[in-house]
Image (cartoon, rainbow, N blue to C red; front, side):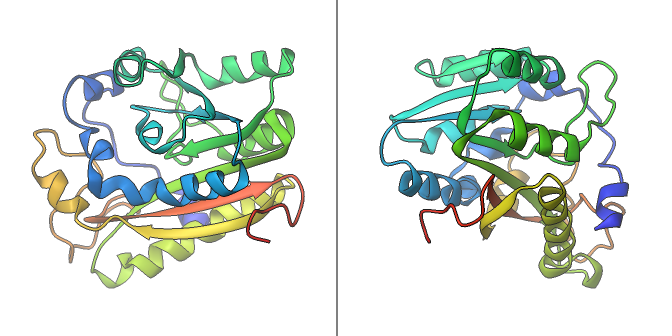
Length: 253
């Protein structure tokens, strides 16, 4: 847990805006990436058979929108103007806002806005200030969402993709264990209660990424390599953690 939190993500070879100008993030929209979002969507469909509100923080290219039901009142926020421009073209029926979370979230609290679902998909361990690239406090983000923006019946959904390989130090189980302990600890400190967890393998995503013109910084072609960073890898899986303000609030209980 401590190692994962302390080791920085790989250095960025391109800016975030540049990445949205090419195909760097195109793998997120591929069919191989579907298991990243399916557990969340299935859970929400069971929890909210009728209308519900959802806040997607750091929405990126809003790939989650492809799987959400029509009765979801969706709002996506990202600090990248190019990302939001793309989102509005792909999903004109949904609402998107360009804003930095450190500015927008307090404004929402002032307006007493609450959401039935708040999604952090790929945000933890990677949230930075757009201008300074300073790392944001994941613990603070989780606690703020749980205690200030979540409705009484709501769920905080943390989707954490992680890379792994065949090297003994970087296997699926080694990486997953570090990640699980880290996220569970943060949710517990934020006084949240995890009601559902799921791990999904994104099978074939590595082959999809090899076909891109722009290869993500975390991707390493050799699965047997001793990766230099805990964020690097060849294959990808996703941990989904769903928590609530109250223990036992789950459609599966």
